[in-house]
Image 1 (cartoon, rainbow, N blue to C red):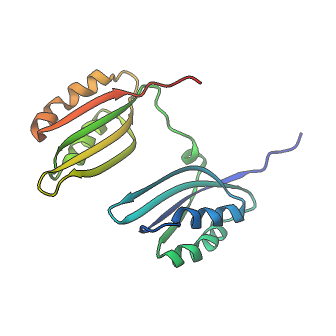
Image 2 (cartoon, helix red, strand yellow):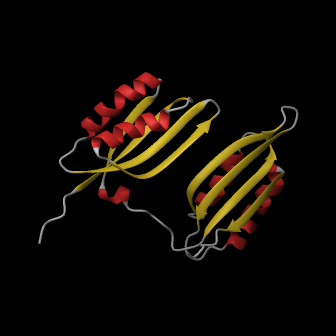
Length: 186
């Protein structure tokens, strides 16, 4: 029986002014090194582009080698780069046994919407898996949009979350919706 090679995992963060070719430039370096891209999130925020990648590579390999390969491409694009080694407990998905829900919040732009909604969720041990905000509408009538994908802990229900957020909906004068993400069988 042959022992499986140890797999090392890293979190790679790249942030800077948005422009075409950022993802290609970074992933080219990963490809040259033979890294596997396990998980990723990339988004544009105003004029900034941010990406977080979870990459893996078989031992022997080093964080410094990964950084040194990616740094020239990031520098050429004006992007900042950070690389962090992940430990075994950081690479295992922490999925909830409960339902996955999408929470949407729409209303007049005002300070505190994200804080107030996420504080309520944190108080019930609801894990936020994804969060996005956007300002839509017109300059005269901006509308703030907050979208959250959350994992409900055992015992929590979508109806319970709607009830939890009912007072906040009135206080902030926003619309809040909660819907279950239904898995689709293939």
